[in-house]
Image 1 (tube, rainbow, N blue to C red):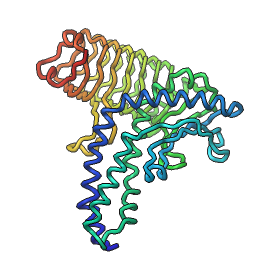
Image 2: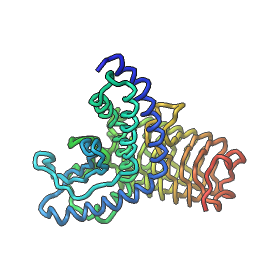
Image 3: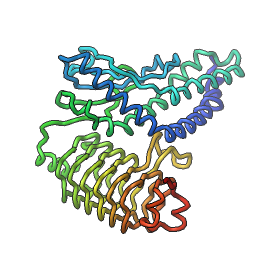
Image 4: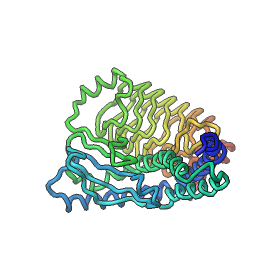
Length: 372
């Protein structure tokens, strides 16, 4: 009601409450991300099967995962999964499933309750409709966790038989959004790709041209791809032997089951990057950066960062010299001859049987998380 009072309420009450909830949400995200991944893959697979039965004559061009603000503000913490044909909203979608996110999104309700209680100290100066308005402003903070959880899980979900056996329109996309709206791209497929054209486009190094791109199953060996931005691009099962990716932004990129023997990734940004099952013999990750979580000291670190996954990789002879690999997952990787000299490995996960093979320093042994 009074602008000065509302500004004071925002600065002294709303923003500190939001900051506390954000830290709680980040801790919860890191704790539940694998639990959610399992839930997402299961529900996504069920949705694909349900679509096949419900819309046999429709070929999907889009799958949308909606937050739905109306549900959120009413305390309904679900995200419907809708299938659309290539006409998208022109023809309407078919709802075939939903994600349950009660544990994470209940923090939104907790934040609202906190602000309502604090608003009572401003009787006659801050009214409930203004608190509601402030809460609407805070929805994007929670939506980003939905997006990051989907990005964390989509690689595995799109390898299920239910998804792979489904016919899809050319240029098929999966998106998330806060409303019934176009939202944000999290996955796309590109059929009929010409390898020569792709190589030419890659060597041109066009700014923002490689985000969320589909490079699955391609042979890009011995290619110069340094200083590229490959945010969330998909290279799964590709050949990248001796490829030069130095100083590239590989945040969220997927290299599962790639052959990357001798590849050079020095100085790359590797948050959320998935190398699970890849052949990385003699690969160079020196000076690489892989953060996880949200940092109070580094506010540029966005919500939901997870460390790189090197699970089940062949890392014989690979170098991580002077890299920062926070929260990385090295479980069950072959580490014979790896160079971890002067690397920071805070909260990275190893198994006990890998320790002698990895030849870690005393400081590094204190940094890592050991699992059976």
